[in-house]
Image 1 (cartoon, helix red, strand yellow):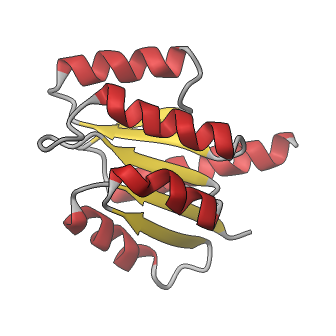
Image 2 (tube, one colour):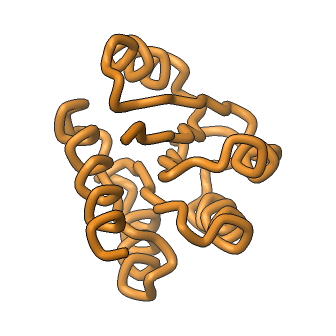
Length: 135
């Protein structure tokens, strides 16, 4: 099964590196979106299995509340799409908001910036395969 991943992140260097890392892996299809304002439309077009949304460290989307709203919108339109937040482990407010969102089942998981790409990819596979094994 091919896993379709929507990356919503400002860090193009990270999204590009992830795309390169999985470019020869038949298990993944990566769609990258840097514009948070149209992330929901991108999700509707591509119907991802999982969305990975970064809470940026600067700019107008440097807000867990705004990024979680993107997750909520995607979940409303594509309920089967898993939601993962990527955040800075030193941003206490974002960490609290993300942990609360996980406890409230608004997101499926979260990762900190200091995780490796291999760990991130293993999380993605685990989340999607767990869902496929349950249904």
